[in-house]
Image (cartoon, rainbow, N blue to C red; front, side, top):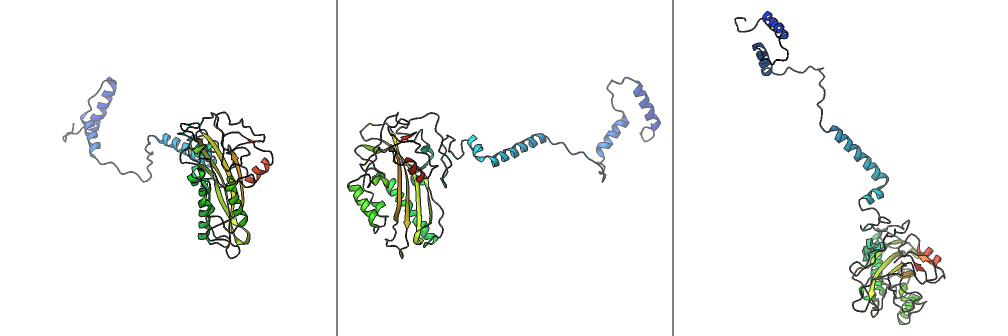
Length: 369
């Protein structure tokens, strides 16, 4: 050993030869030099890294998992982009026309391509759930189920005037087909007040229809009414689905068309009655908001251009001025009509097509109610 306490190179080499010749598996206490070298390495700062030294990147735990998760997300986004309705259906959403769940439908901004799907089990309605087993369970309540377009300047009207005309057109639908008093058989005064009083033929029709209803003068073409002594509407909700559209009509008028289906749950008026039936009415009403400079009219009123009605379970050949629904759990699909079968919830055909197909065939048979 040197004077300074260090081991010479010759002594170190001899030690290594002797150690290698000894028992290789025996644990050894590090030599003084080994301890010194180890201590020096621990105490010395780390050597600077060379500018071209390659250092392998530190391995990140879970990298493969993140990669797999990212791949799944990418695939999921692709599926959503290609088939959003189907993916929504997996989670109980979708457009509802055939998904069979209970999520509310989006508003009907255009004519649907097909009828809503039928439930596998025909669940009967109850007083607590009057729309159970019906596509209407997912429709809007009252005017909420009627899609309103955005207003724009049209014909003689500015954008604001068109907006008011659309709002008043919807008010007419509410006053004629949703008002609780009218549904109980009361006179629809609010609705009639919105019709041009100078339109003589329509005013004659209205006067006759309520005084002496007939096939040619039927108030049910425009108004929904039930005889209070026979039937009462269940609850305070009428389900609706439909839309309002508009365009420029003759002489610059704003022509508004409302195509709406109404579903009325009813029970017999007798006390204790709990069997629920449904009357389903689809109406198309065309209203003309005329330019007062060109047409004799009253401010805030419209002229009736046309009105069509298709009714299910309102009474076959009924001319009483009131809907006369039938009761009986087995009536769906076994109606007594001699006409064709009709799905009252199918809004995929226009009212013109529906009327043309019905023709003079008489009362049809509803496939569901």
